[in-house]
Image (cartoon, rainbow, N blue to C red; front, side):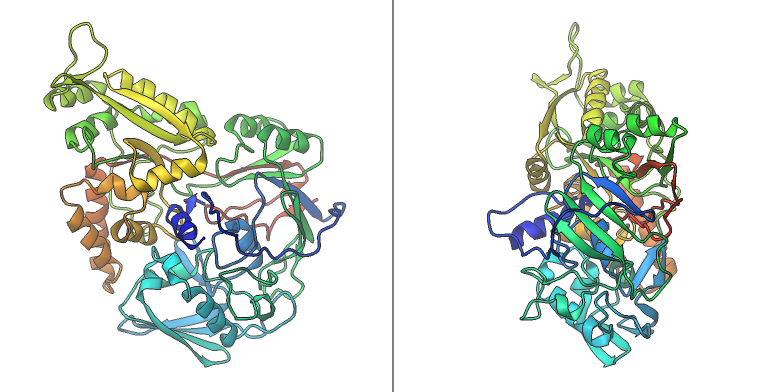
Length: 544
């Protein structure tokens, strides 16, 4: 199971990146699921809502990948959080970082309690860190995990992390939905671990879990011991509805109140979203850019190891028409690997052009000619023929793949499409067994540091395959490793400019659009908000 967990990490979230998406499975026994007593789901009250999700939320363990991130965020909190690139206090009220960047001292909030009424203090923080770091190899994509030397309790309200080397993104990675979320004492197994399951999902978050029936529903109510502003709702029920049309029918029939799209679950197609948007009986909501959708080109195998061929392929893609066709402009065309709204990523990169005439010129220069009377290019007697692999369950993948195939065919490039079930698609991606495929950046709070760190230190990511064939990959990898440990802000920004420019000019990771999340609800539901790519903040949601 451990290798399966590590494998799912890299995709985050496909992961995501969640995201990233939890894909793949193991033949070994899964960790125990902590389930409060099931029974019939309660009837909604005036101040509760019911919403649909495509899959069961998992085992509610805050430290592993077997639970959906949005549910982990409902129940558990971290020392800090991040909003719009800014780190803010959560369970830690304040912190200091030593001048050399090697020590971070957190001052914890007073009088914080877990949902069972037990106290939160530095000792329970240490217990959580110990449980997480006992299987640190599952988080080797995190620079913080690799840089951490030790951690200690200073006193009941003070906790210290000691690093082997400075790591500027330590706070951002602590803000991640997992693994650094705090579980209450009664939630740990007898040996103090969480790697094989938890006894109960006891957290300090806004919500607590009251009931859960695998594959059917989960019932949450507001945490009566929450230290901050209480949520506006009294609670909510999550109903598992795998099919989009069933969810839409249920919303129209008044059986559920909300559909919230976190990833391509098919619960909220663009057509369904637009139908609700144009119906005055419903409220619709849409986020800003969450992460980047990417066409990943395998730079390590011919003919795509040729820069001119990759550039020609990119110039042949009319991404504006693609986004309009697929999303009806509910997502913006991506201009770079990461949005300029991400810290350190506003470096002036311009989006790739659409120029099929220039694409043909480059292909001719690379030796790929079009014989008279032929519609396919050849070189040395061999036809140009590559494969695009995609997740057959992902509606956006399917639509993108068909358009890309048609557009590349216009310049004589034959693309064979292969849709595979999710686990097979991911297996192929991390093994690098593809010509073209789809990936995503990881979004806040993982971009740019965690995403790039995984590319530089672990060859089991799709994005790695999109860069590994570049002649300057080793230099790029070294720059990524260096930038993460720079303490000089100006030098860090300059190095990120070089890194992101190198990626852009390598034509191995072609940005398509900046992903948005969408939601539709009955008219009585207001204040649906968006946070990280795979979170569903319901603290300010109201029901009239």
